[in-house]
Length: 311
Image 1 (cartoon, rainbow, N blue to C red):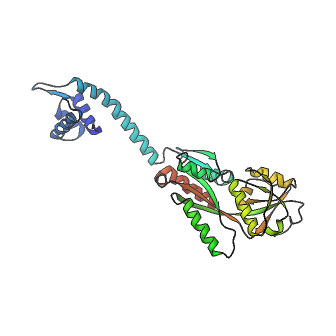
Image 2: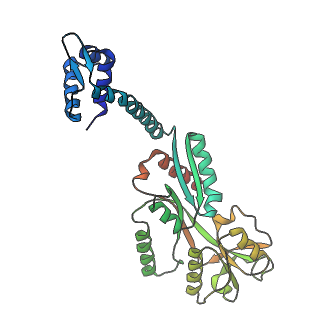
Image 3: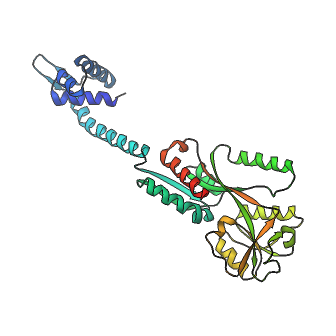
């Protein structure tokens, strides 16, 4: 196998015309140069230098190798400089996937801070809900996934809590999980609704309502929460678009559960939020693969997401 250090020695010998001059240029001894040339010739299986009492010249194979050595060593130097830039956060790329309410709240502040601290680091953003976003991470289509999972409806059942905890651990057990925040769901009612002025509303009080549901994972959580309250919700509309949910509620077409995070970036029109009991929460996290967590640009992105969530 040809090694870069041997190519550097060959190029120095070809340029200077002698082992002693090459040794001075490389900052080593003449025997070391001679030994490395022997190793290189053994590696390629042919003579590269013709040595006489008056001169040293390259063979045809030596000329070919020197010609290629220039491009190879230039490429290695460029690669070393580029890797050093990435390691030092002077360059780099991070592919981020986030669910929509995270994209509109946590992500902008995090990326603005990242750009200010490390202007050479580029971040791309794609919207995807979990579990699709987590699949993209495992498939190598992104470097960081902003995701969420729901807690169980808060009750006194330790068995249910244990099962939920075990399932959550299995779901992301192969990933690095950076917890960001706990996001409580709130009720969203038309402003003319009989309970719109209430401070707290029980889920059971909404048993006869028409419901507007969100993403598939959110719909499952809605059904679960309602069934624990003793009824099955009648879902008349379903959409992943939070502004659409708010518009449908504002038009009096139903009620909904929305995460507080989603409400931060949308101004409700003709709708009112209420606290719902028992509480339903989702855990917001940033996920990456163990090897990616050691990449400086990815680690910096995780840090900035955590800082954005703490504000």
